[in-house]
Image 1 (cartoon, rainbow, N blue to C red):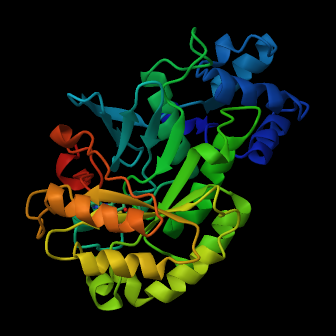
Image 2 (image 1 turned 180 degrees about the vertical axis):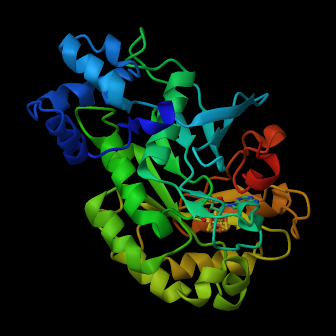
Length: 356
Ligand code: SAH
Ligand code: SF4
């Protein structure tokens, strides 16, 4: 029964209004409904008390407001939480929450698996790939809020879930339409109302979509650079063969809204003996002159069968110092949730094997 009823979560404002009108209601009712779904986080129509009883009954008959199914939840010793999320077709993806003291970011997946095959990334080894729908993307955020009981506003007024990073499984700019629709819902001022300044989208460098992302969404951009030379980046991030470093950096220079107060984050995974020399660091400083940039040095997170090792702490420290001396902020990221394989690049779902 349930599966035949249409899910209202993940519809755009216009689509929701169309559903309401199709039920013979005035379009403004959809505003109230939107508020219940995205501000209150309500999933039961019967508790949407500002709607007439008859409408609530009709909604219950024809629709649902639902989240993807959580088929497993793990919490790390450092409090990082990971959900294995299952969709209607039984395919799975992972969502992670990384708490800080008084804030935290949900790391959302944009695809089941990833079509790209970066050699240091565990997601890239997964065979099965499909795009997630807007409902499945928004749904990950909503289930995180469910999990921490943060609808509509916690009693003390503060929320632990304060930011979103599109850094889970998949390449968000290869699923741009659905990602854009989901983020537009999340940023809507009458619903979840998360500011674009609290959202960061990470891309491996899908150059032709970057401009649109900046213009239409205006979210913070993070770019997975990882190498200073094309011959090496061609191996580490194979999409580089299509969009080489110079084109990528041109797109970064042109990214709407990027300036010295709002810099682009360049992610750089630290691979021992591969991309971590002093010469690499100096070349990074040179390459990024004139780009409003900051770095995020990511210690390589190991996974079974991975062909790399993480650089030593001393090496990472020296590498960071060269970037700092060159005028760039370059914190070394503290890995989170490694014990539950929730850290950067460790996500993978065994959709086929786990299927019941
Ligand atoms: N597909 C997007 C976003 C997801 S990955 C992208 O590639 O940007 C988020 C970040 O983690 C990227 O910078 C990615 O390169 C990095 N990453 C992947 N595997 C990693 C690993 N094993 N250790 C550390 N960082 C990794
Ligand atoms: Fe895909 Fe990003 Fe992993 Fe590369 S690093 S395989 S783009 S998820």
